[in-house]
Image (cartoon, rainbow, N blue to C red):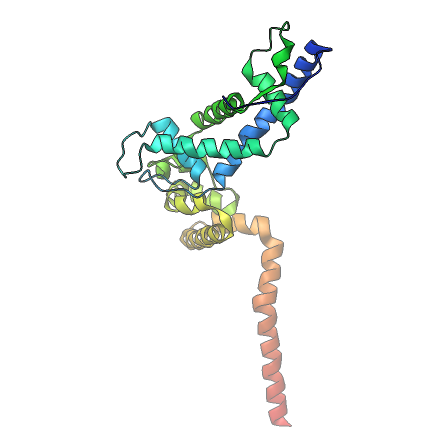
Length: 261
């Protein structure tokens, strides 16, 4: 066991223990979240075939739910054990950043041996192993209940059933039965996120929307567009088409008048 010791006065022992436990609860939650954040900041290794893991946290959750992966297929030992080693290192790094009094409170909370108030002498003992085990349990609890269908091999079927596109273009795709196919086509871009991918999806959606407008024989889609953006459409047509046409006509007339003079 990895222990350090802090001297603690025995006066008001019960009150101290209760306060320490209360203070430890949010600290333990923060530790769990900090470890997950650290795993999310690590690049995915790419060990699980057609799994769209964005970072090591996705892969950790996948191996936890779908594993264990104990075969030494790549010559690096058990994959699941290797993930555990990474997680253990990450947890220890998070513990290193905590002050001693926080580690003490967490030890009192996680050891579970403070119910015996007749033995206050051991209260100053810090056990990183007990804290680390509690953090590991918290991380695994969150990892085990994540819905990984969104990154799994059938994500192109799953994601279009779980998300939708709003707005005129999204409504148009939905009305014509094209929304699921569009989302399925751009699943990888949606998962990647980021400005570049959002821009790529947006331009593709605009092109598809314009195609649907041209295919709209009864004019319902165009009518919906004008109902919502009539003012903006008028301003755009005025700026980009009508005013340049009038300016050109004036220029033609001025040129004709100059020729006559």
